[in-house]
Length: 351
Image 1 (cartoon, rainbow, N blue to C red):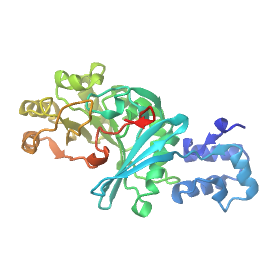
Image 2: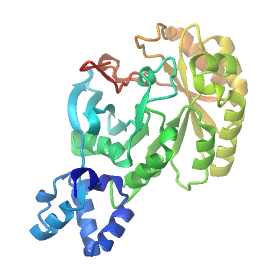
Image 3: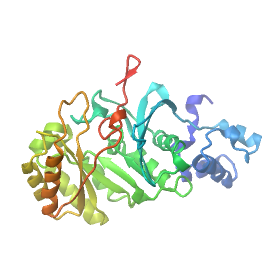
Image 4: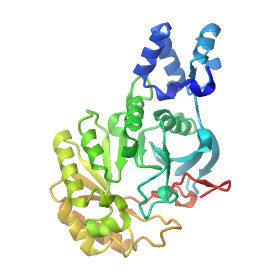
């Protein structure tokens, strides 16, 4: 069997691995042993799995591989609150993952695609286009790589807010989520996992029927089609009104609040008028709004509003009954803040 035809264990959910082991004639408990080595002990080499016999290890290696990315670059922010990994995948594809450290809360932000086809004007991830989806194993490997370098090797939260549109890779996304949540793997609570989307309505509707209590985050960034459409081309396919209706249906079906992400860009979507329009749009919906001052990228020559303007925008929403927080992104100094991650290599340089 060639290397290319070997099955990456990380691409299988724990249940799938157990079924695969059984079909190969391995004792059922052997799958649990392998899962503990990988997800509890952080061992990604079959030869180091000492409670497996040599003959069994050879049989496993004839069918399976544990494919982990290489760390091409590692950066830590000046305030020690963010760590960014540039990871090399197969076929010389690269993605970035970020850890955000805040007291006991250690959040890992992972990518779901190489590049992005949605091309939001303010986001670096899609500026060079879309290349491919990640497999569930490639998604999980980012989490494991980051877990292994964190204090106490403990992850408290996962956010799918890295490179790519998670709902454009829905099948592999959900597979990775179920593994992250499985007690046979990392055992991260569903409510500690946040899925972010730029507003892919059919997948918002699908998620409402999955029966998993993950957090849903929707990138809104504009209260009207005119404002939102100017910076988010996805608005042409999924305009504001039907998007909000889909969100209302999701809340009604799941009884779970939605977080609306709203990136504040001076002169684009951050005026008092936009704040009032946003208040009217969201009034009565079980939700909260995360206001995020724009993090600069070279392709979008704009700036965040002044602090006083941000506070006023928040006040208008709160006075209108919309729960609102301001989230100042960490990691700007290493290009690890919201909207700054990239996955493209040009002439040997990353940009």
